[in-house]
Image (cartoon, rainbow, N blue to C red; front, top):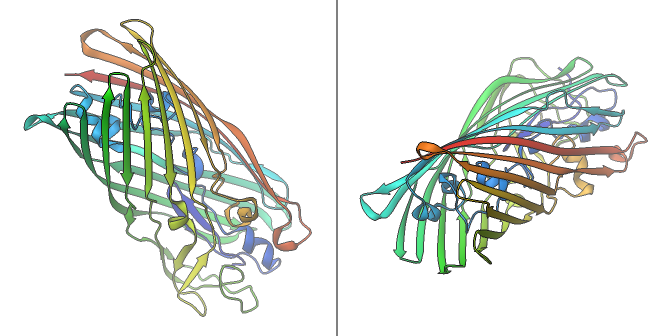
Length: 435
């Protein structure tokens, strides 16, 4: 199969590659094809969800100092020490709207609906001051389905899918009656597949590949008084095993002996890559200015540059054993603000706001065209109803405002400007039970 450009598909946390396409317009598809997997589909913060669970979502993700359910094990495990024994199940419908321009006119993704599950629990263990909890969560993921016929390259077809699930058994203990520490072991599994063709020629990695990662989260909380609580957490880099694909058909050289992402060719055989999940820090404060009102503020730093600066694909390339794709993501700062008000003994209402810096600069759009991690601003709303028999129901909704990025021409050629746009909506429900 001919390849005139290297494409990668990066997803929910994976960015996988594809190849080079067609000898007719070498540079065009080389630059455009640096990425054929959209991983920013599930989130505002790069490809990370604003919050896990519907309470965190309704608070705009500002829960590091204000834990409200057992999903806190994934954000700040120290919060488990301040929760009653409980379990919760969350289901969320996520709807990202994505459009892109490969240089031949705008096209949108034909698949725009995803399901995100989460399950958590917490309870005292061994002693009254030791708490155990954790859960299994959908924390990021992706899927794109682009189909654009009648281009100079023929029909452009791009499909990608990734499922990312994380498990975080956690333990917390109260150091004093005002402070707690927590530790979670973060394990994750991701499944990646994609298929990308230009004019009937391309790279087919449709067979799902699994990778597994491990890391850790530590956290702490301190109740200064009844009206002010501080919280902080550190999540280590999550190291992943390699993803493997088998290319059973040869894809032939179309460049002019170039090495690297532009004009590289490869042959039949096994290809592999891996993508780690970045370290991150969160710190925040929860304030009760008046009775029944909670205001929570949080700041986060995500070290995307360490894991998304470049993406290496290893395999039987001509002249080299790997190709490095220059994604050049920048580190991200995120500000979260949430408020909760107790209307009565049965109802709580919430609202949140999130703003994150864009990890992708305009000048790097060429390398991230199919990875639109460009949304920066989101608003959220939510509520909880306490039901009979210790049950509760929590709902949340999110909207991220549309972001557009445009970057001149592709590799200096007189095609239409490269462009990517994205907005997101989600709605979720969570049912909880207190033991």
